[in-house]
Amino acid sequence: MNRFLVGIPTLNEVRNVEPMVERLLKLPLSFDLLFVDDNSDDGTKEVLNRIAAQYSSIKVIHRPSKLGIGSAHKDILRFAYEHSYEALVTLDCDFSHQPEDIPRLFSESIDIPLVVGSRFLDSHSLSEWNLKRKFLTHFGHWLTSRLLQLPMDATGAFRLYRLNLIPREIWRQVESDGYAFFFESLVVARRSALACREIAIHLPKRVYGESKLNLQQALGSLRVLIQLYLRPYSVEGASNDASGWDHYWKAGESRGRHWYAYLASIYRKYFIVKRLSRILQSHFNAGDELYHVGCGGGEVDALVASSFHIVGVDISDEARRLYQKNFPSSEVRFGDILKTSLSPQMAGIYSLGLVEHFSKKEIVAILKNMKASIAASGRVVVFWPHRRAPSVFILRLATVVRGFFGRNEALHPPEPSLLSSRQEVEEIASLAGLGVISYEYGPSDLWIQAAIVLQPKCLEEPESGMSHSEKQVSNRTDSSH
Image 1 (cartoon, one colour):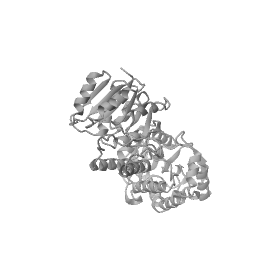
Image 2 (cartoon, rainbow, N blue to C red; image 1 turned 90 degrees about the horizontal axis):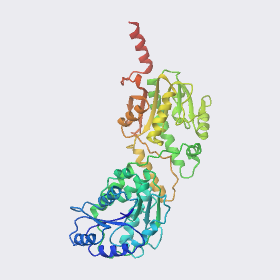
Image 3 (cartoon, rainbow, N blue to C red; image 1 turned 120 degrees about the horizontal axis):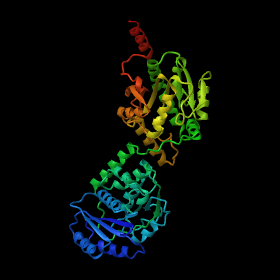
Image 4 (cartoon, rainbow, N blue to C red; image 1 turned 90 degrees about the vertical axis):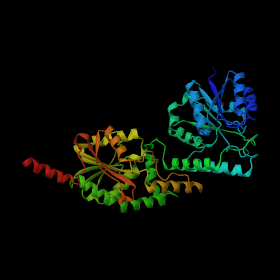
């Protein structure tokens, strides 16, 4: 058996199959060939069976009905992994992909797991296509590049998968069975940090047949694209680099981002300041010492700074400068809560707009360090933006509009871990040895952030509405009887 497989889905390709095989067999490569046929009714099945009987290196999978182009590619991938092939090339059978381009896919570095044939690297690639096909192709590319941030040709089937560099399990995350498979699989590949490169290909006019993409399938692909856009897939956290955060906190000075800084400031002032004060006063005594990690400019501390002794902590020089400017008498220090806990231990620690910038594994590490920074009876308060927040959709829409006008600078650091539910909080907090004693998400800040109060699991107690000081008084009264 060869270590390289070529996989081709077919549906009514009776005039294309034999010429395709002839051209493939002329290549100076050693490979096996797999056809996946969706119950063609034009004689394709019979031609495939005859060819497979003639060549031991050619295999055919007959499926009972039209199950979708994405489903066919999944079956090709499954077959390749099950038979231990090291590499897989997929292409269409209508000669829109030229078999002679296959060796060019392998010309890329052997360390690149995924190589894509691109219709957009050469301005003459689609010169033989009619205006309608050109428009639809370029429009699809515009959507995937703008909404999904996929710079490569994301809707084509001409690809090289170096399977020995790609864990099989990542493809189980691809849900689409139709044409959306192609861009969803690249989203999954990007999420899994798989390197991807492109080669330029020329697509001639289709030899026989017409596109099998109908209106229903196009609308289905659009639905998947919107779902992927609204449901972030990346699990890579923000680079915890001081210079990057310095740049973020200078947004007000950046052309094209000053409006974002202005709106963020309004949101903090009118929606977060009072909410933060209410929550901290419910769980701590006046005068308690608290760490504010990822303190930024400290706008949200406008009320709590007079009720508690706040120590601002941030890795960014610019953030600490802004905080000291806003609160001249406050203590501000450098600290990286991802890497280490803070000392001395205090009554509590809180953060706003911090954890969503990190991976789930990193969030656990952050919470562990926050727990180690508080006294045994202390508490951790986290404001965690929700993935269904209106602001998420608005900012993504703004990103698309800005990109259309050539403004590609990100408005804020990546947010790979927007919150999905209280259950998710409980699972992550539990890994850090913390229990949830309060979870608040609603209209008080326009359904944008969940306010979460945690404490060591051994001290976990149900939500009661009593403040920390009220509970201390209650405990003293109980002990006197």
